[in-house]
Length: 79
Image 1 (tube, rainbow, N blue to C red):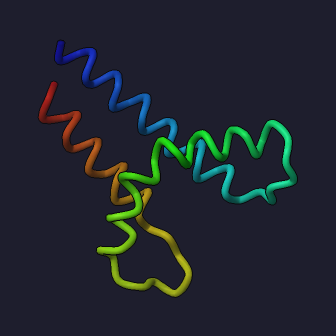
Image 2: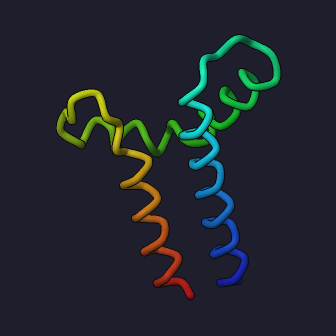
């Protein structure tokens, strides 16, 4: 059970990475836009509160970094 939970945390971390990388490219519709929308739906419920809690950083969104770090700590505690 612990391995499954750790794997799910790893998968969610990869979804966050995909969302971050896709945010670097313009959205022109098509498959890229669909993937961006899908990853946004999965991550925004968690990233939104983190964004609101972090102070403004001059246009930098550090919420994915904070979430990834928290997920890695949680994964370490589980394993």
